[in-house]
Amino acid sequence: MAEARPNILCFVTDQQRADHLGCYGNAQIRTPNIDRLAQEGVVFTQSYVANPVCMPNRASMLTGRYPKAHGLRENGNTLSPSEIVLPEMLRRAGYQTCSIGKIHLAPFGARRENAKHEWDLYESKEYWDEHSDLPLPFYGLDEVCLVDGHGPYAYGHYKWWLDKNHPGSHHKLSHEAPVSPPTGARQCWKASIPEELHYNAFIGDRTIDWLRRRNQSRPFFLWCSFPDPHHPFSPPQPWCDLYDPADIDFRPARRDGELNNLPDYFRRSYEGAIGTGGLAGDLRGVTDDHYREIVALTYGMISMVDDQIGRILEELERQSLIDNTVIVFFSDHGDLMGDHWLINKGPYLYDGLVRIPTIWRIPDVVGRARLLPSRGTPPNGSAGASPSLPSLISTADLCPTLLDLADLPAPDGIQGRSYKGILTGEASAVRDWVYIEYDESYIADRLRQIRSADWSLTAHACRPDGLLFDLRSDPRELTNLWDDPACREIKQELIHELFRQTSQADDWLPPKICHA
Image (cartoon, rainbow, N blue to C red):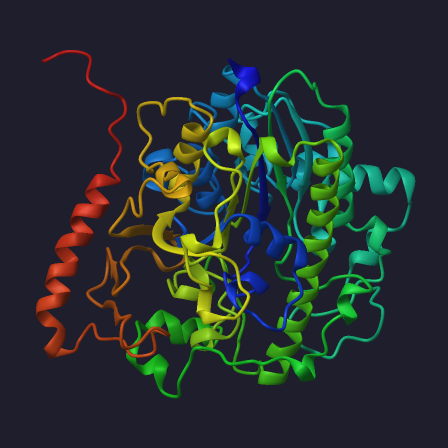
């Protein structure tokens, strides 16, 4: 019966590294509410993306399929409405489905003259300049309160509400109206918009409102997705002042001369000679002091999101929902944040970009009230940290895992693997490898990566060089062994494994209907 199934609440952040949370061993950042989820649940320390940019990875989360199968290969494509998505599967099973915040299954910048279908436009700024709502259901979502874009580019239902009720306030998100003059750090300023009018607060308010007015006779699926932390780095007060850049412990994973041992597009990106799908501009003038300011403001954005999550958790408790709701917190990808001389994202498949935070709190309706500290060890060996598991998981596994927790079958075409057994203590692993794709039109190439606990290998479709790291001796991925003669044998073994992994990620749909 649908009524006996657990509620599902997904907290999603944008471009957040795994090590930017207290429960992952970060002693500087303040995230008490997310840390509380971790203490009552479990932290996955080896959770990886299917793709390291927003749109393809979000589509993989909601379809359980890899980008080359679901078709949203890189930012700027659209997920076809013919794809079967998690909200629609839950909706058919009796769930009420709602998204509040960022979705990003259709591009922000689509214009009518280059759109192939009307649905290419539904999340575009051009569409929202003229429309105040979406056709529903939208990818299986009965209700949508959309907040797309970032910083001064935020739009959707949020901008319509803000312009109607607080005219002129949207401008206070801009770098043209900062609290104080910017220092010159890349995309950094302190937004002058009042905290209560910021889009993060809007998402928190609307989420609480929806929880109060929902149909209480049916289970719910709620996608609560914050556009932060993401560049531009521009939180409002008091969050912009919470961390002093001078106090930031900035220790990027990089070394002098490193770019000489990498494919040439790394250096060209660093020097601003090329732009990619997630990074553009010359980074040679970005100083460590600039990076400390970037990190300080990023921490402020994360702490602001954490505060909103705390408000939502309080509402769950007020309604006695906390122990009948599967809660999962994760991000769509990380941010290089100065690692390997780069920032943001793109075809640079390093740990800071491809490893994300993933935290689950499982109610007793699916096996146990919470996972006990004895189930794992603290990440990074930090005292008092949350129980953690080193099991390899992928964002492609999110959809089948949630279906499994709701006691629903996964449809044909699902490529991810349910790890419900890991969450309930019945299994320790479902993967030996994670597989990551990245198609990059701007360098006319395709990257494919596999990762295990011991090795990381990245190969290109259109160039002979690649990346190979021994994660046992080089966990910060500082020495590329691709051309090391001593690693020739292991490289060949890993290339064979990469072939197996990428072949398994090929689509089996449509299925054959007869012998011949």
